[in-house]
Length: 133
Image (cartoon, rainbow, N blue to C red; front, side, top):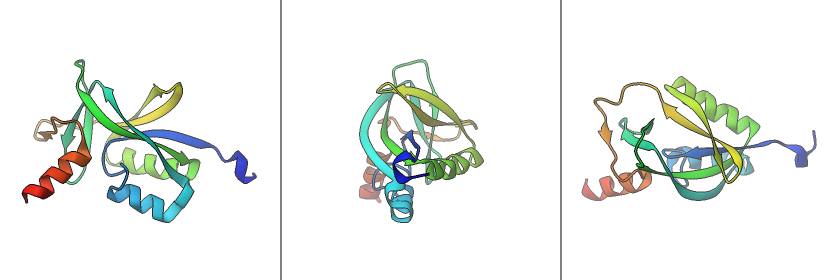
């Protein structure tokens, strides 16, 4: 297979894979062009929860906003990220964003004891938390 025919996948990320967060930096350092930031946007219908050092989302029927980064990743990086997410209690939901299939990882376990991140923006939440520590 030549380099021009490498399949790319799109994922919407909201936690440690967001631009400049630790898992994004890890994958970018290790795989270079295997992971590329496209844009940041807001989607509706998801509540963001702090699970400790990383977040989870739950679908909701209201218009709650969630800030996501759209990434384009190689098939290998997609497989690694998907394995990481599925093993941690997430499921795949496919959204149509900009007329392209885009994968979002939705948390499947209970968030009853978890803190709701009302802003819907994990990076802003972490930055504010660091300022108050």
